[in-house]
Length: 183
Image (cartoon, rainbow, N blue to C red; front, side, top):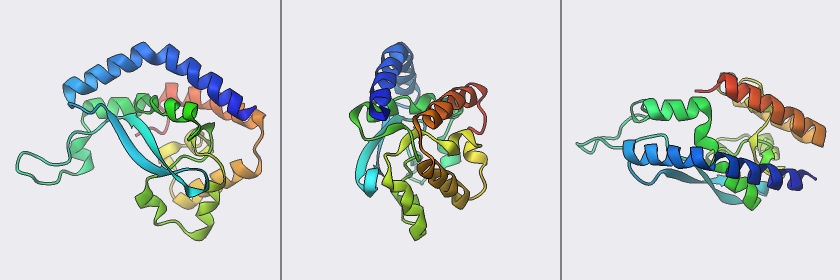
């Protein structure tokens, strides 16, 4: 049932949001250049890597002199808008459709962050990573420590139900529309 929900909702969102995604891609191409998509290896189910796809929100990493720019300088107004509205994450519905991710589950983190995990943090890799989860509806970037995030992920895994997924999805819509906890 969970996989069926993932497929139906992903197809619906991808079709419904296609015009918006085309506009976002065009604006990114004009403002930041190509590629318009950001692709990155992330650990998925059982820690197996998959390529997560998002809209690009940052300019190139180096300035005209070849100096490495800090992320704050690379994230312009467009990137801030895309992240605040979560529009940068809409291509991830493709990952859900492919089966690399689920609508709800622990958020897949960059490999550099996973390398810093304590042993118990890896329990979150026992399920498919998700577009949203308890972390996203409990404050997103406002949560203080990764241990708190991991506890939310473990609570989700231990208490999973289709009803919990539906509650998280509905709350995610509310949180995204309010821009709560986004950075």
